[in-house]
Every structure is written in structure tokens, then in C-alpha cells.
Amino acid sequence: MAGKIDIRDSTSNRLLVEGTDDKFSIVNLVRKHGIDWTGADPRIPFIQEHDGFEEAMKALPTELKLREGHRLGMVVDANSNLGDRWKKLHGVASSSGFGLPAEPEVEGAIVRDISGTRTFGVWFMPDNASSGALEEFLLPLIPEGQLWSFACKSSDGAVSHGAKFGNKLNKARLRTWLAWQEEPGQPYGKAIDWGYFNYQSPQTAAFVDWFRRLFLD
Image 1 (tube, rainbow, N blue to C red):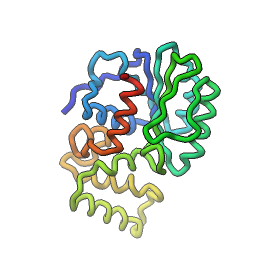
Image 2: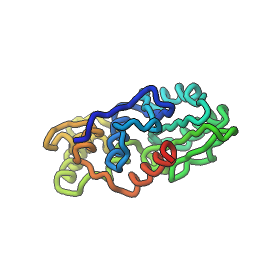
Image 3: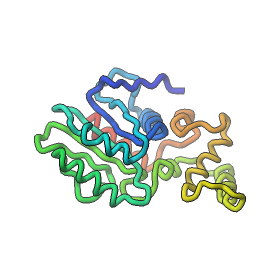
């Protein structure tokens, strides 16, 4: 198991996320790809959790008041309205001097302000192009097998028995599958750390590349 996660609030860089699952999924995923979160590297960002997209957006104008040389990242869910969310974020960033592209970039957006001294990056889960959230990002990392197939069938069938998860079917499937692991019911981040998920996919490679370019290059 990986060592203690050291996420310092004294670092000059910041990463805004929607919640605890996002934070620890990101930490453990990038660690699996060789980025040492427990070291003394001052470039590793402090992760700030917010209770969903709207709360993260409320914090964004203040966070964009970066000092020279500082870097800010934002990882949020597209859900079913990527276009609307991008438009809203684009407007806030523009007001702070950051010219985001007109549309999300599949490799993740990274821009500098008009002075060229401050950097802002955005990643929309799952892949900057599709509807979805963290769960859709994690789905390709589930090992193929009968257990996952049965978790899907069980979750799908639960609707006819009164299950109330509505349009969060993939989340229900993931939670069901995690409930049947050696240590049942672990959160996403710990499940990545413990190897329940794979960590190699084109999508994760693109995300880790975005993270490296934003904070480490």
C-alpha cells in the first residue's frame, strides 16, 4: 500500500475538485503513474474540495487571483451539460485574464494569463468531450470478468425492486462491484491504491499527461 498522502496547503499550486472521491482518486491515480505525492516537491498542488460544480465555481474567481508563477487546476464533472458548464467557466476565466479555448480540448485545456506568468488548467470528467462524471472515467479501469457483469445485472435489475438511484446507474454499478471486493465498500481512491482498478487506459494516460503539463513541466 502506498504511504501517507501529504497534501500541503502551503504549496503555491492549487487543484479544485468537486469532492473527496475526486481528490483521492486523482492522488492515487497519478501516484500509480509515478508521481510522488508524499515528497517535498513544491509543484505538487494542494487539493481543495468543493461540494459539487457550483461550489467550485463560486471559489474560482478568488482562486484565479494567482501570484506570479503559480498554477491552478480544476477537475469537474461534465454531467449532461458540458457545453453549458464550459461556457460558464469560460466567462469566469476570461474575466480574470485567462483566455480558454471556445470549446473543451480533448487533451485538457491549459492556458496562461495575458501577462504569461500565471497558468490555469481545466479537465472535465470523463474525457473533456463526453457526458458523465468520475464514474465514467473509472469504468474502463474495471478488470473484465464475471463479477463486473453480475454487478451490472444486479444493479440494472434493482430498479424493478424499488431502487432509487435514478440516472446514476453507473455509480450504482461501481458501488455494487466495490461491495464485493476483498475489503468491501472501499471508496474509489483507496480502491485504486489497493489495485482493485487497473490504472492504465488511454483516458488515464491523457489525464496524467495533462496533470504533468500543468503542474510539473
